Image 1: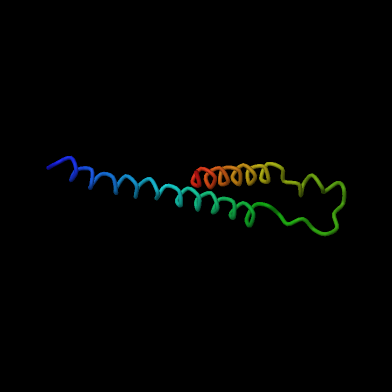
Image 2 (image 1 turned 180 degrees about the vertical axis):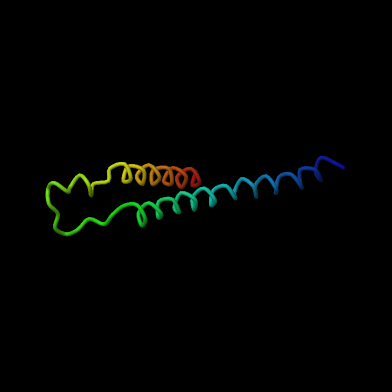
Length: 81
């Protein structure tokens, strides 16, 4: 088997595997974000007492969503380079 035949087989498989990672990662992150926003983060009522403000802030969950959005943004920027 010549080098050309070997590379003809290896290169398409490499690019297929490499390009498959991007959507899997991106959609995996989006699924986690959706799960957090719909299942864990409570909707804030229009009127809220001051003493319940910390309860509805849900800082840990919101921080986790922000981190995932940042990771997703990095993936998108990296794929455009």
